[in-house]
Length: 294
Image 1 (cartoon, helix red, strand yellow):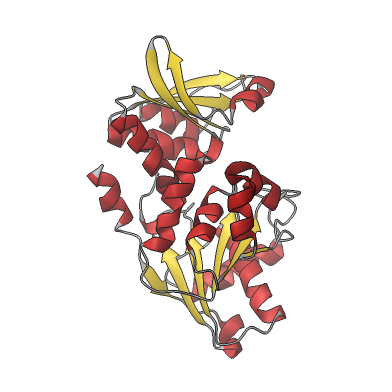
Image 2 (tube, rainbow, N blue to C red):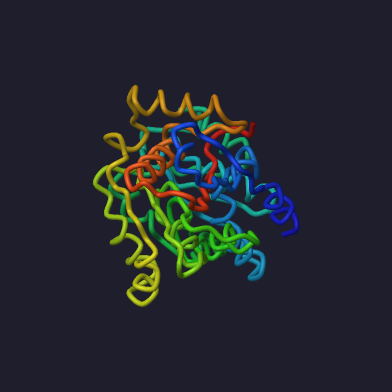
């Protein structure tokens, strides 16, 4: 699995600036996981790393995973399976779809993913399947939608453990909570992790609890700051305020954020620091990808 190590080495720790925070004199850093790969983007390779290792160590045929019609996770999984020489089955929400329904599904098919289009109710029952499956006499590892399992958590810890520096405040956009759990487990006890759910009405703490259980959840709970009001009315939704913020930020830096994940998280972080007048803090923003490298 040396190719994964080579990809992860591309992630860099950099400083950044933003004029809205100048008077606070905080030292601002970013972990550039967006540099890792165009298709196995950002935290996707983190969540897949140890799942792929399980497949290789146990000589499994391949992986099965789940996603919607425009799932970045499906593309990332297809690309990673191709590089790992593993077969892959992608189970897609929506039996009205086909491999040519959009560019995402077409690319998954190009990468060798066997696509299965499921009725939404069936998909909902299967999307959290986790563990070894036997399909037509061959063994596959089922990875839940979004790479959400303990193998994924383990990989996401390394976002922090591969950094030699420590920070007062960490910040990350939150989807399935897999990445934020790993980060929360790995940061110092004295630090705080700001998590910004991008889904409206998402119960962040309940989801984290369901993945790691009571003992582990209460170990990280004291580190968490959940900013749940920055979803801008739901996943992939935006407005002129957020779009203007993203454009202003991108104009001042050598890397981009986008309005679906990283833009919402950065907006929340900036507001939190300003509203609480947090000065002279060391702050790390984790860039989870989602856009082409710049």
